[in-house]
Length: 235
Image 1: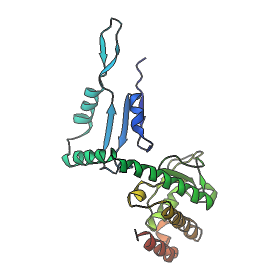
Image 2: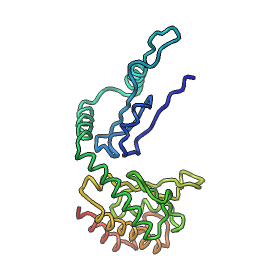
Image 3: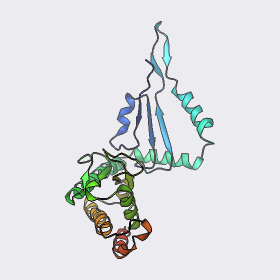
Image 4: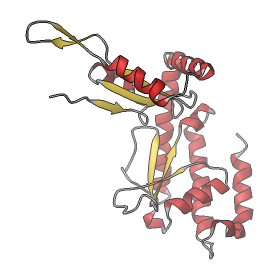
């Protein structure tokens, strides 16, 4: 039939290597959860694909096509420092410590999800099994863009994100929160409870006090912003 099965596993932390036995191509980035450089990797099948009608061997031909597409097709040339960083990240990913780290990433995400729900936020999936939490802000009267901006003001990085039912990706109703960077810094569930409180204070205490929607006019809440910012930067 000619179809090629491809999996994009950038946002998965649940032992994605297990899928390689059935996928024809697998793509991933190195920096979201591998703690690697700003780079990407492509895994593909090699060797025997099947036997032809006359018993001849038909081999996978992904390697040459992908290599030519990457260079000279898309990439100007190899960067040795990035290649070394990729190798280092891959080496670390084979260790028991990295597996423990991944489990803690998911545990922290689950705790963040639980705490935000306790504070009245709607989680689009009513929970999480990976390192991300997608928060639906429509019940709070906030947009994803405003929430992203406010959290940035108090030194909490996140991304605006569409949620089910959104009509425009330019004006989404949610934010996406992840726990990989926090876990790398040694934070655990008890710390996540505090961070959920920071998020809540940033979103509700500041946004509901604003009368002018322009980002540059959020300074009436600067005293709260600075208090949360200093506490957050203790790590």
